[in-house]
Length: 85
Image (cartoon, helix red, strand yellow):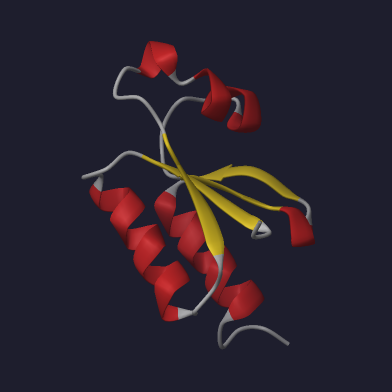
């Protein structure tokens, strides 16, 4: 099991943006597809406090329920990409 888990909805352009960054950085990650109905997204709501996607968790760095695709992409670049120390 990978340290990073991504919650996504197939066809979501914001999710595709995050997935593309994960793939560009050649990171291992698990994907959990959420239901279309926001009312049924209890798992992602428990993790992040909201029902929108994408959401990631990163156990290696203590990240629980980060949302907003731009924030996730920036985090991944800073932590695993060229911004990493």
